[in-house]
Length: 109
Image (cartoon, rainbow, N blue to C red; front, side, top):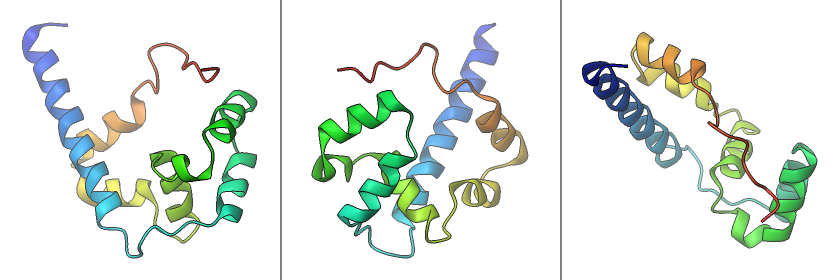
């Protein structure tokens, strides 16, 4: 990838990141999850993630964006819809084409 393309991609990811941050700040409700919400979220995770986040515990997981997104989406406030409304079509497509991880995450820590 040449330097110009690399910069363009970094700029796109910066714009996408800012919009994702705005999604969480613009949520129509204060984030007030319950222990029941936490347990329901844990059930949806793969075994390694379940073990990792269960070990972290409910208070710490309230700072985890994946938990926050789960909670918001259960109330009808979807990240995908927010991104569609706030990103240009190219950035939206890039977001959904991106690899989630360059290597497998380690949830055994």
